[in-house]
Image (cartoon, rainbow, N blue to C red):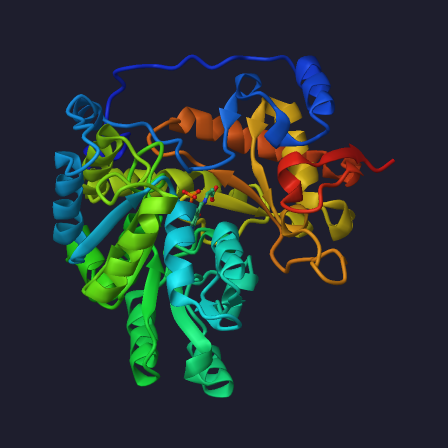
Length: 462
Ligand code: F0G
């Protein structure tokens, strides 16, 4: 399978270990019941393999940890900020940068500066906090991902692509002055960690130019997207990841980034702007009361140094190949066992199609959530539901929103678990699948009015 054996295992060795706590099945049955069948309410110490998120869960390298010791904790003018600016300019070609405490901090500062009340923000598929900050700024978030994304079984190399026809028709119909901006999420988390092709980004830029609109990126998983372009798009096979990233971002006007993903740090975010100095002045003005002074934006100097180093490190092709292939390794094991997943596997996670896995559980009874509970009981694995439980209710008529895509997300932290852990996860999913007929749905015993999935309590429907 591997011609080159140096590509067969992790491209790093382990210098420090973190023991995992092992619980028994009986203990887990009790613990999840006590947590109101809500995996967010478990103690992380009671979790064996934690696949809740890839956000802020990466293992940093020795080079990043060394950077932590070089933190310049000055309130103003920190050398770590200046280093971060240099790195952003070098990788993305953007002139203006501020740090924020995390991705949603960047959204909170930038979006109100771009959105007028009632304007539309057109995305491939907006992430939840992104949508929330669009709505807090009185904008309307619209998703325009290609139809192929909804067809989980069939292969498409770029399921995160914009439906270009829908995009252009929407702009013509609603008029450009009613569109605040276009936002491309790379990779597209909500569609299953699916990439956007260079050709699609280029076309979105062409449409943006035609109607005088700005294009921003939600850049949390930019390097994983670039790796997929290199693997799957003609003309990019011999380009470096850095060249691909540079080209992708040349089509944008700026980005927000949760640095907790591809920047390989545990906390942090960014706003970067290509060349609009006037917008940057506005960003700086709002950043100070909300996140902090321009040269720290809610972070310690050491955090910015680790981020600058992480952004350079993530471009390493050996790292990216391992990362993407580890997720694929898990995805292939599940697919080979006949388990329905969003295919192909995403960059940061394997997404199980909950409706197809448990066809006898109505979507109102949260089939994907039921699978998450069973995975915890089976092997102490904590996955996350990205489906009807998360979607919540329509704010006006209070009816359950039943999203087309209802997923169990097996999110793989970066550089944290080995393929032995992937084997455990695959085996656990297979065992749960084998007894799927006996799995019941869930109903609320307590339902909070907003963001209910974080704090809700549930019980099995008898
Ligand atoms: N944009 C995308 C595409 C994201 O996936 C996230 C976070 C954010 C923005 C917000 O960034 O958490 O740093 O404030 N996604 C995490 C997840 C929480 O689990 O998918 P943040």
